Length: 613
Ligand code: G6P
Image (tube, rainbow, N blue to C red; front, side, top):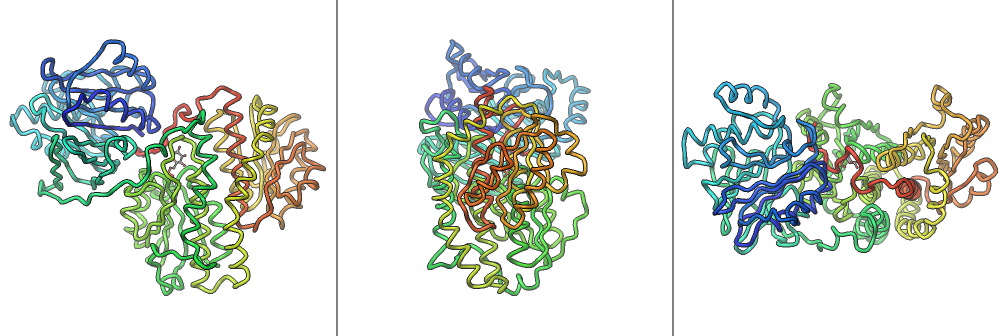
């Protein structure tokens, strides 16, 4: 949700900023801009509504800007519609201070009115311009103290922010500040970066540090000084990013989403295999004492979007394995529902980015109420990872497409590992069952490969159904959880209206929407519930629906007697079915969106990492 990058060094900043923005575009893409300090011309700002390409074309088309310090921004609009003037960077009235911002300044209106009362003229509708103007206001009161002015602004504003700030009066400095929005610093020889995430800097440096809430950094070409909110110097730990830049590139695929779908077997192996040794799940990175597990009153799963759908599958899995109550809640609801949490509650927080603001805020609330937090996170060093009591990383590598695929799959994988590990400690799983699940877990990547090899069939089904105005997904138990994800994937990237229903619930309302020719995707992998789901398939068939069934290889024939088409997935342990069933759902959504000519990696109105409430 908005990507920011800042550079200070000895090379031309503009191309470096544009390159950085190209890596951050998945965070927001309704407008983009850069500001560079040109020693001869002063602060130069180029910004434009539309994709980054629009901005790049303007710069390439002659609006060359020289200078070795600058800021870049790619926007997902909150305050003020996407437009040239609302794009970042925002500049103070005297044109000497430029700001990029990710987050929301909640009290911006009050400050705006205050400044307007002092005669300050505003040009945009954004909350961010208020920060640029307020900075100028404080700076003028105490000239030559940019850091002092930044601190005053931070005291005055409320909300969430990651800022990059440059000033024509201090062209040797780049200032960064954060609260509740991600910000990293990148270290090089003779240059430094600030950025929303490491993808923006990896081409230039692998050495990074993660700013914490309340911290401010002053970067020069040769130094970085970080301060806490009291302006006391802080020593930051430096980390080495260990993945290659190719991991954040398309690698010959038309879309990141296609690449990431195809990467799932590897991502699953990387996440699971090192954690299984001699048939046992080994979670060295988990510190949950068995006494805690025994006393645990419930598991509260907190997540948003697809991560929440992993939580839905996890509920079935963990309750079965641990025999403890598991509640799944949307992070945005958790905060305001007066949740029943005790010091015996385990909050299981699931997040690809580790930065989703609703999830982060819910996690903090759970902690405040006494819960112990175990998180499943993909982005190393992200805020949720750092603030959890325990974190288990999903080793999916960078995920760029807005619609998640490989992160979802690896989150599920970690859920299985947690379930098996804790069940073994608690003694709630029999030895034979444990071994059967572990053995099957090791086969999942090969089985996913099998499904991927047959993706041509799914592309064919997509070519039949891509024009349907409305598509329903039904299933029971974990099939229902997968249906939720299949439906979300489809609507996210193809803009087809879609709903997922627990198959047994269909008759309580939604069945009234089934007409001759309506497509129903019926998930019926769960062996014990197959017959039950099939009776719902018969119900929709009798009302004229087209049914695209998904079941295990062993039941394909049986399902084919009623369904119009069947997508088989390899047989596996019922608990692990979501890992296989989700793959055809992802492929179906992808091929439908492809047929419809949609912008698959950057669907309208969405952003990968949602850092506003
Ligand atoms: C956004 C993304 C979804 C993602 C959700 C939660 O809405 O578009 O794909 O599932 O955020 O993100 P998280 O990073 O917390 O898993």
